Image (cartoon, rainbow, N blue to C red; front, side, top):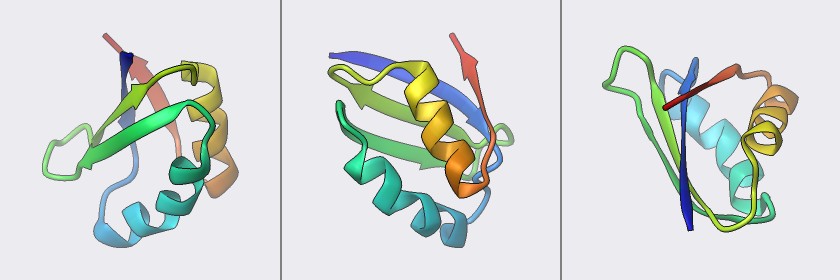
Length: 70
């Protein structure tokens, strides 16, 4: 299991509910959470096989940006 972290523009509950079905269906994603209280809106993904690129592509499909962070 690996943890992927992204700086995003998912900034409210409505945005979270918009990405929920897509991230929940994403192959290899075990769980995820967005810290909307953090200025950088940090998305943390627990992943078995999903890559950073796959998560970014999923978010882009829904209209959000994600930038990998260490």
